[in-house]
Image (cartoon, rainbow, N blue to C red; front, side):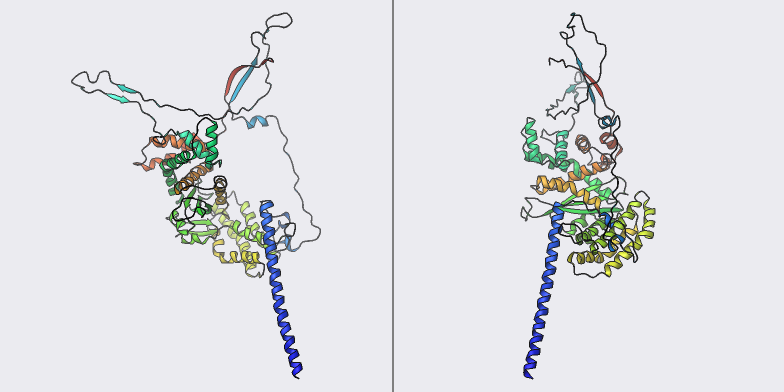
Length: 542
C-alpha cells in the first residue's frame, strides 16, 4: 500500500515537471517566433521595398460575415491580373515643351572675311540661306561680385546765401537698408545659403568649399551667424504672423522628430532635442507649415504652441498632446495600419504569410482609405454625410472584430491594444468632413528635417536650432504655396529692412506667402522664352 502511494506521488511529480517543462518549451518557442519575426521585419524594412502598399491578393474586403474574401477564402491556384503597361508615344514638340521656359540665345555660325572667298575662282561668297543645326542647354556657374554702395550728397545752390535762408540745405540720396549691419552679406547671398541648407540639404561645411571655389574663403561660423541673425531679425516676424493664422484653422496636424543640439544647458551633446511640425489641413485655404524647436518632447511645448486653438487636432497617439487644452483629438489611421502591417507574419523569404489577423486589420484600414479616395473631390459637408453612411459600418465591424480577437502573437496583441485603447479618437474623424483620415501631410513635412539632419548632423547651439526651425517654416510654407523659395527669401531680405513694421505690425500681411504681391513676384511660373542673338565664328578651322 505504501509502495503504491509512493508510485502515485512520483507519477504526479513527473507529470508536474513535464507540464512545467512543456510550458517553458512553449514560451521559448513563442519567444523564438517573436524574435524571428522581428528580425524578418527589420530586414524587410532595411533592405526591402519601402512601399506600404497592400499586395494584390488582399485587394477585396467584404464585411459582415464575409470578411476579407482575398484572405479567408484563398485557393491554391491564385491568379493575379497585372495591368497592361503602356508607354506613351513621343510626339513632335515634346522636347521643346521641356525647355520652353528657358531664355534662348542664337549662335550664328558664319564665315570670316578670309573664308568667305570661293576656293575655285576666288569670288566673294553670298549668303543664300541658313538652317538650325541643334540646340544645347548651357550651364552658367554662379559667380560672386562685390557691390559698393556710394551715396551721393546734394546741396541747394540758393540756400545759405541770404538772410531768408541762412542755412545750407543738404540732402543725401536714399540707400537701401542692409540685411545685416556691419556685414557684407547681401539679401541674395543669405537667401542662397538658407535655400541650399534647408531646401537642398547642403550643410554649411560643403557650402564653405563651394564659396572657396568661387574665390572667397567664407568660414562656416560666419555663414551660420548670417543665418541666425537674418532669421531672428526678418523671418521671425513673418513666422509669428503665420502662427497667428494657423491657430485660426479648423484642423491642425502635428508630428515631431529628433534634432541634436550640442551646447544646451544641462544636457549632453548626444542627447535628443526635438523639432515639432504643426501644419494646416487640406481644406484650410493657403497651406501653413510651421516648425518649432524644443529641448525636450514634453507635451507642455505643444500646449504652449497651440494655446488658443479650439478645434480638431490630428496626430499619432503620443500622450503629450493630451496636455493641449480645448482640442478634439483625431488619430491617424496610417499609424494604426502600420501596427497591423508589423503584425503580419513573414516567411523565410520575407514574404507575407496570408490569412493572419494582421492582414485582416490592415484590410479594414485599406477599406476606409479606399472610401476616402472616392470622396477626395467632393465638399467637406458631402464627405461627412458619406462617412456616416459608408464608413461607420466598416468601423463598427472593425472594432467588433478587434474586441473578439484573442491572440498570443506579440505584434497583433499590440495592434489590437492600440486600436481599442484609442477607439474614441479613431472615430472623431466622423465629426467633420475637413478632418483627414491620416496624418500623412505632417509626416511628409518631417522629411526635409530628416534629410537635413542626416547631412548636417546637428546644430551647435539652441540659437542655431531655433533659426533652423524658423527657416524650415518659411521655406516649406513658401513651397507649399507654389513659390520659388529662394526668390521669396531674397524678396523678404530685400524688402523688410526698409519698412518699419515694429510700429505697424499689420503691414507684414503683405509679405506672407499667399499675399497677392508676393505671388506675383515669387511664384513659380513657366515664362515664354526670350530670344537673344549672338554672332560667333564657328568655322572649320576653329
